[in-house]
Length: 327
Image 1 (cartoon, rainbow, N blue to C red):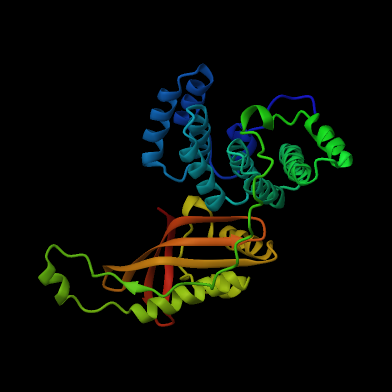
Image 2: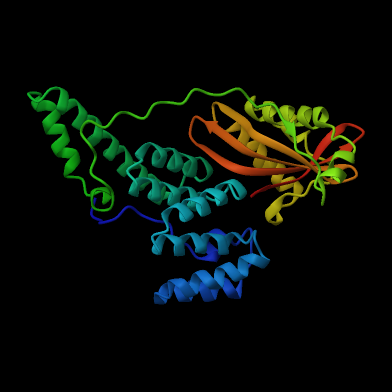
C-alpha cells in the first residue's frame, strides 16, 4: 500500500450531503477557514450556524473535521456518531469514526464502523481500503500473541513480518499493538428494555408538584417496551406503529423517506438488541410526556450508547411517539 495515512473522509457538500441539505454560506466560510488553518475561527462559525440549524448535516460533518484537526477526539467521535444515527444513509461519518477508533488502537470498533459504512454504500472504495488496513492490524495483533506463546514458531514469525511490511499508516498514528493484549470480548445481548419510572412533573415548588395529577407511567412504559421490543425483534412494522401519524423526523426527511430508512436499517443486521437505561418521564402538556433515557444499541456490526429523548402523545390507540432526537 503506497500511502502514509489511514484515510479520513473529507467531502464537499455536493458529494455527500446534496440529497439532504443545500449549500450553506456559513459552512462554506467554515470550510475556507479550515483549509486556511483557522481552526478556532471555523469552529466558532459552525457553532453559531448550528445553533440555528442543528440538523444541517454538512455543517455537522465539517464541525467533526475541525474537531479532528483540533485533536478533540472525544468530541469528534460524538459528532460523527450522532451523524450516523441521524443520517444512517451516509457512509462518510462511519468511515471517520473508524479512523478515530483506529487512532486509539480500538481496531474492533473501527472494523464495525467500516462494515456499517459499506452496508450503506457497498461501492465506497475508501472504506474498503481502510477495512483492509484494519484487518491487517488485527492479523498483526493475532500473530504477535501467537509468537508470544510460541517463540520458536517460524511460520508465525514469517507471517508477522509480511504484515509489518504493509504500509497501512496505522503504526504511525496509533499505539503499537501490544503482543499480549487481550482479545476484546463479545458483550452478551441484553434484554430489550429496562423498566420505566416516572419523574415528578416540572414545578416551581414541591407542593405544586405533589398536587399534579399522576403520570400514566404504565401506559408510557407499554409503548417504550413495545418500541424497543419491535426494534430488537427486527419487526419494522411493529416499530413504526409506535410512532404517531403526524410524527415528523428530524433533519428534514419526509415521513416516507424516514420509514424506508428505518426499514432498511432494521432489516440489515442479523441481530439487534436495544435497551432504554435509566428512563425518566416528565409531563410537557395535558396529553404529552417526554421520556429521557440512555439508549443502548447493539448489533452484529455496531454498538453504542446515546442520550435519547422521545416525546409521546396520548391517543385513542395508546401513547404514540411524536418526536425523537438525540440530546
